[in-house]
Image (cartoon, rainbow, N blue to C red):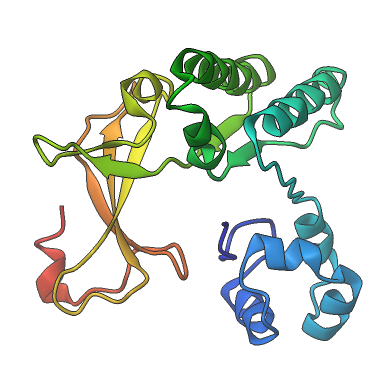
Length: 216
C-alpha cells in the first residue's frame, strides 16, 4: 500500500501531505477513494489534486484477474506508445505473493507456468512500453540455513532485474516506521548498499552529526 509522501507527484509538498493526513488520508488508496474536488477545496490542492487523480488503483484478487488487467492495460498503452498523451510512467503490483502463492502446492506445474506468464507480462510492460514496474514480494526463511529468501522461491528470484530488501530496524531508538533498505540485486550498481528510511515520510531519518559517520 503506497504511503503518501512529498514528491509523489508534482506539487505534493510536506505541508500538503500533513493536511491530507489530518483528514485521514494517509495512503494512495485513501486518496483515490476520496472526493478529490472536496479534498482540493479543503486543503487548497488545486492542480495538485488533478495530478493525484491520475493515480489509479485496480484490485485483482487472483492471478487470472491480474493477467486480464495487465493485458488490457498493455493493449491500451500500445495504442498510445507513439503519442504524447501517454502519461503512465510506473506500474506497482502489491503484492505478487498474494495472487501467486495459492497456486504453488499440489498443482505446482500449473502454478509455476502461470507465475512465469505473469512475469512475462510485467517484463513486456517494462521493455516494450518503457515504464517502471515495481513488484512487492514477501520474504521467508530457509528451513536449514535460516537465511532470508524470496517467498516465491528460486524461480521468481531471477525475474526482477533489481531487488531491494526492506527489513525492520530493531536497533536502539528505532521507530516503528523505520526500515533498512538493502540493494541485493542490480545490473548497474554494486550490491550490499544500505540506507535507513522512514516509511512514514519515505526519507532518510534525521541523524545526529556523531552518528552520520557510521552510516553505510
